[in-house]
Length: 413
Image 1 (cartoon, one colour):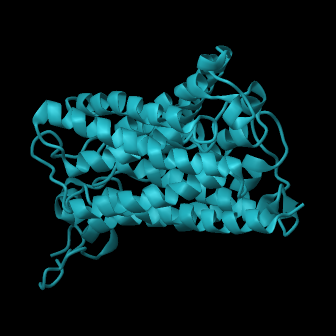
Image 2 (cartoon, one colour; image 1 turned 180 degrees about the vertical axis):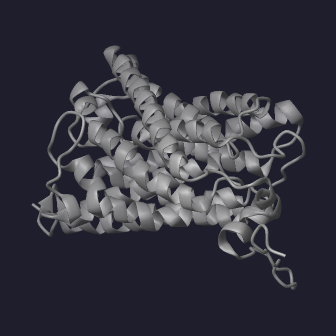
């Protein structure tokens, strides 16, 4: 039976999660060079269109219709049968829209690994195909009644489905596209740190719908997820700033923004399964591996430009595994974790993590190679030097009172 309060909360949550994708664009765009700011924003805005459309046409059906243990069927293709009838206590069409916002932001997350060098059209094709053949099947495994759901894996709002999944894809795409030409040769300084802080604040706001809305109603579970979404990042932020102060004597703004995102990522799978004190502990613990993973990555040749792997991959893995440690049936009514007498839950969580890594990595590689057969993935050295705003979109983020650069096609006189 439908419930008006649940419907109202889910309408708000859907809008909040949709806002997270442009917020992610600002979070990312502040950390790139000014000549690539618009392109970075567009890498978040484009999935709002193409991934959203793919979700309505087929993605929702693959993820949430009845089918096998591995994939949903085709009964909801083109939203056939998705109407005003009840899905739990909310309209089915609203449930579909809410889940679609997750598909959109997950695909957009990948862009942080390949900003400033991937051609825009192949990127758009990639995220649309990836949402159908990687995101939707894994969503079915965990949330659509698939094999991980039957195994008993706990993922309240997307530790595996969203963050580990996107991070593994980001790693594969970063390696496949290759590093920026000047990576490791010169300092690549963020062009607008306030943009990044603004994006962080909006992401945190949207995350209350992301985690709280995953209760699918205005209920006690939503309240628990809401509170954990508030306090886990607070703990991560404190630990991260202390690590910065001990290591360098300075607490950086980029570090603070990254810390908040790491805390949000880590608590996502656990949000409705752990107590608030456990959520604070989880957020504090998650800061440490992500912090040192980021430092390690910076010393390698891996150009994961905005550290999707360190923030979303490592943070997601830590959060998913700690869910198996800290889950408490007294709070969630579903399952206990290791600390409360159920040691097998950690093993189940580990299976979900490994399965997501393996499938996302392999399927992403195949999709990327297929696109590369018909179109170059990255821009030329010349285009990269000019900047992707001009070469991919014909616009500039900051004209500074001067005329736009005139870019002639290669070979013209």
